[in-house]
Image (cartoon, rainbow, N blue to C red; front, side):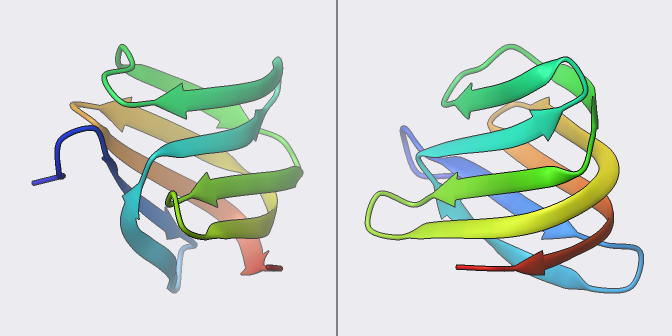
Length: 89
């Protein structure tokens, strides 16, 4: 269960978990433009394009180079599933 005001986030590929933890915000490269995700966001499922995803924990910012995939948001749980990806910062 996420702390109040925080999102529970997982960034995964088919073969590995790239990152998981609590975050205050997430930005992903959706096919219709960058999608910002904050606490209590309405549920959404979006297709991703290649680009940079950012996870902000409040004290750290993690960036990932991603290639395709999707993001699912429901009940403050964010799952980012990518075809390929790597942490860049």
